[in-house]
Amino acid sequence: MGRAAGGRLSGWARAPGYEGRTPSATVHGVEVEIFINEVMVEALAGGSLAAWPDGAIVVKDGFMAGEPHIVVAMQKRGDAWFFAEYETSGEVVYSGDPHACTRCHDDGDDGILAFDLPR
Ligand code: HEC
Image (cartoon, rainbow, N blue to C red; front, top):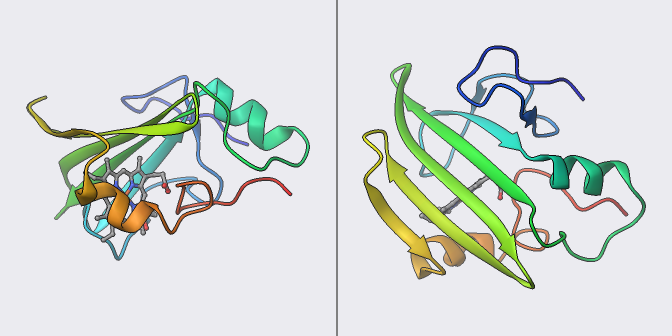
């Protein structure tokens, strides 16, 4: 898996299937970049999992007309995901476990929509 080269989250890995800026059909922008932390990298590289591990973090940058639009993040805390959405100014739009996020992410593979748990 490639490393993010020179991006804002340089040092983070890119999510599987999201090696660069990728078209998206959902609410966070017309294009997205998705980054994962080391806990997620190790989970993906390891054996079969039924759930993502505590401490896993996924961050998605959403772009509109080529410009940064929104930042969304998910962090696994114990058995639950903590969700957050930020304006590009840093202002928090949502945080915690809002229906605004879970209404879609409850359909994911243990919450994650962009890629699957290793099986
Ligand atoms: C309308 C459905 C929908 C809603 C509502 C939604 N998401 Fe997503 N989200 C998606 C889809 C689909 C993806 C997969 C990547 C893509 O297509 O952009 C995704 C991907 C993500 C990712 C990358 C990890 C993953 O699951 O693939 C994060 C982080 C994320 N969303 C955070 C949030 C947060 C935080 C909220 C609430 C503020 C939220 N999302 C609300 C549909 C949704």
